[in-house]
Image (cartoon, rainbow over all chains, first blue to last red):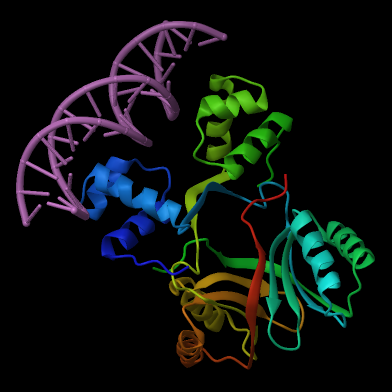
Length: 153
Length: 153
DNA sequence: AATGAAACAGTAAGGAG
DNA sequence: CTCCTTACTGTTTCATT
């Protein structure tokens, strides 16, 4: 999955991350090239899967999603069938922003965004009724210090 | 910061999140309206701060960022000056994708993306040399089960 | 809601290294 | 032969009527 990228590619990616709304001409000017080559590089990186979806970042609080939890999960079950069911449940729930399988004592971590603590409890109850879980710790975010989708290039 | 949004606004936001590249005409057709009203709603939501930056989501692994850590931090220091320094350090480091101040025993959680474990160690060493930290637990992600910027509407 | 000017994306043809 | 520049066309944005 590794792709060879040169300096120009990285500059273009930086611009695309920074502001996906700007025109090709603008990007070309900033990276010191012109439209067509920039467009061709973008197309290639898109095909290679380096560049994914184009989206607007919305303000969670303005949308009434005031509560953010990080959920640490331990389970006693490690069978394939259980895992399949658990993964499907996570993918199906839109309040789950992130889910990772971990190395070490804690098996999974989730990031969950909900309107309030009550909504988190509903989510939690629904989840443990769907799949057996050994131990859950919920960490409540008091303040989002930083949140970025910009990857370091 | 709460804004009143009707069904039409939410449908438009859903489309903008789903694919920020599509044209106004396309969005208008999908939400069952026409170009001008959709455009006006988008402008208002932009001004209200509901709609933020427009970006491309890049593939971290294709860019050689193979390691993702969740870092749980406890500190003994809770003075304003220390906190300022800590926050500034986190904001300045591009490998820190997320940082939250938490309620409870653990004070902070970070999400950190780096090329490999060595790079994480460099980050860690640099961080603890900048600010005093009582206790750190790093959780290594083995598998990204889910990762989305799409907020539930 | 329709119109229109300005800007833009995408493509094609030709030129430089 | 590859990558860049320039030129052109249909589409889109955004403001005005």
